[in-house]
Image 1 (cartoon, helix red, strand yellow):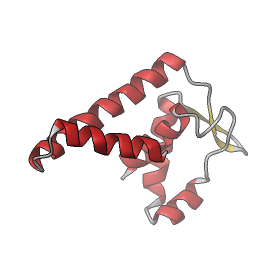
Image 2: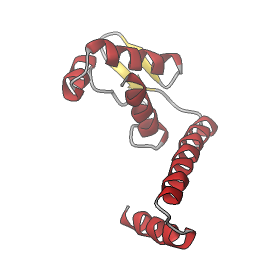
Image 3: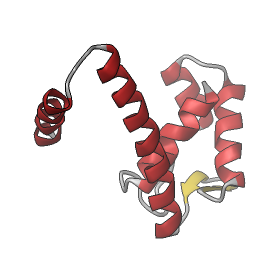
Image 4: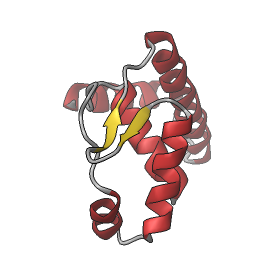
Length: 112
């Protein structure tokens, strides 16, 4: 579960949904919201500190740090590659043709 928390926070930062200096939810609040242990959230946040994605400031909590554009692109590229691999396998398993997959992707793309 802590890996999911890390991944979602990292994606929000790299994707621009969370901005430099923005405060993350408190450990207790996020643990309560997600119904997970405080240690799970603490571990995820501490890993993000070690990755230099967020900083823990005494009295202020965890704040988003400035992120290198190349690092963000590489991280999002890795996530996209994994998602595309999973998508291709699922489409093959469902016997969806490439043309049908293109149509489905176009539909999803235009809904954003």
